[in-house]
Image (cartoon, rainbow, N blue to C red; front, side, top):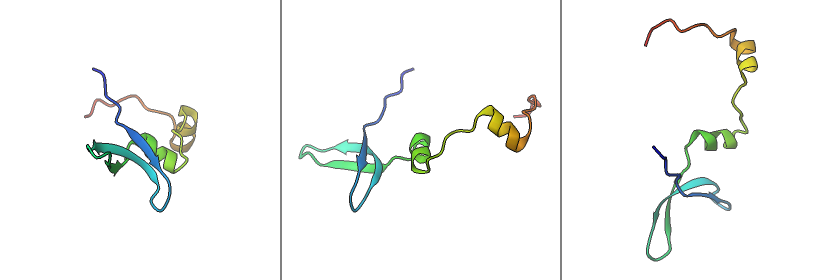
Length: 69
């Protein structure tokens, strides 16, 4: 199943950040909401996912699943 990507804009000025276009009105105005996707959060914090090696260095080697859940 294909996932439709939301229209994304970056705003700079008195209010700045990444936003998703919720509605495009006939008069040309836009209704925006903050982009709260994991990708946007990572960009805001200059974060990257840990590699397996980094994860294991911090928390120890991955264990086999225990069958719970």
